[in-house]
Each structure stands twice: as structure tokens, then as C-alpha cells.
Length: 125
Figure (tube, rainbow, N blue to C red):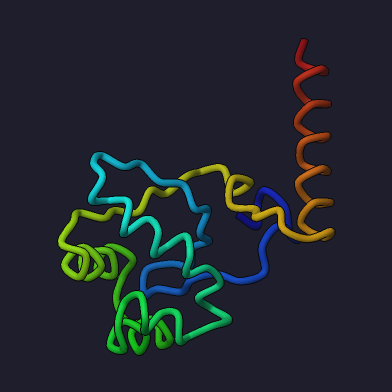
């Protein structure tokens, strides 16, 4: 994420193995998965609102999350049990996809990245 743009993201989800940014992209195999996706989508800004974590994932997961206890895979194994579905993280190599364009600062970051990539593509032609 930071390699794509230093100002692209300010908050990360910290786990024992690494820190991650959420990009709200889902691959759903059936309608039952929509409920779990809605929890992640509507929960939004879990870092700023711990009560949303409790409502979505339970108190124990909030404690684990706050103290970085466990790996990303372990967290998703717990989420899978809670929702009775297999929920897996998808780690993308392009950190730009995690830039949530929802204010003037992040819009500027996304615009700068797109302009930079367009210039690089034109130079390669």
C-alpha cells in the first residue's frame, strides 16, 4: 500500500504476521456469502469504531484485533466459523486498489496515481 503512494492509506489492520489494508473486494460463490460480505461492507472503519467489531465479530475478536494477536489467516478462520462459511483474505500486490476514495485527500492521491500510470503507459508506447 505504501509503495503505491505514501499518502494512500493512514490506517492498517495489524496482525501478528503483518499489517493490511482493506479494499472491500469480494468473490462470492453463493447467496449465503452475501450476509458475510455485507458485514464487512457495512461495518466500515472498524479501526475508528470498536463497537462495530463487537457487533460483527464478537468481543474476543475485538480483543485479538486490538492487540494484534494471531495471524491474518487465523482471524479469517475464526470469521469463517462465526459465519459458517469459508472466508479467505485475498492479498493483492498492487496497493493502489486499497485506496478508498471518499474525501478530497484520497481523491487527490487516486488522481495522481492514475495520471502517473497513464504517463508511464504512454511512454512505453
